[in-house]
Length: 87
Image (cartoon, rainbow, N blue to C red; front, side):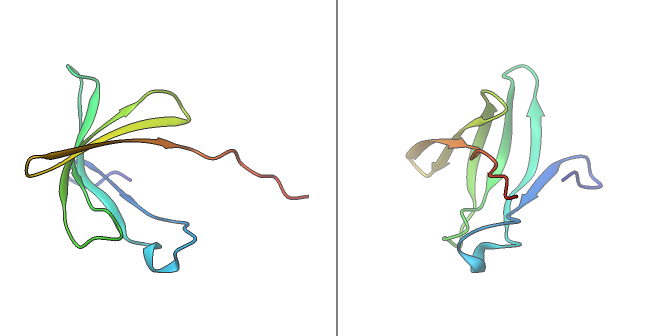
């Protein structure tokens, strides 16, 4: 979602863990055209902390995430699950 200030933020709208639903997952996201990255703050729902993160959309289904806490860097690949159609 886009904030009034022009940055983006995201909330968890669906999760198997009901306590995660409606939590803000990232905030103040701004696009860096030079590096083709989105970046700013990520809030892991299972932790009470904010980390610096960058996001790179590899395709419509794959998002690469790098987050840093002090001297530790972690890299993740988030994949959008296939939509299951229920008749």
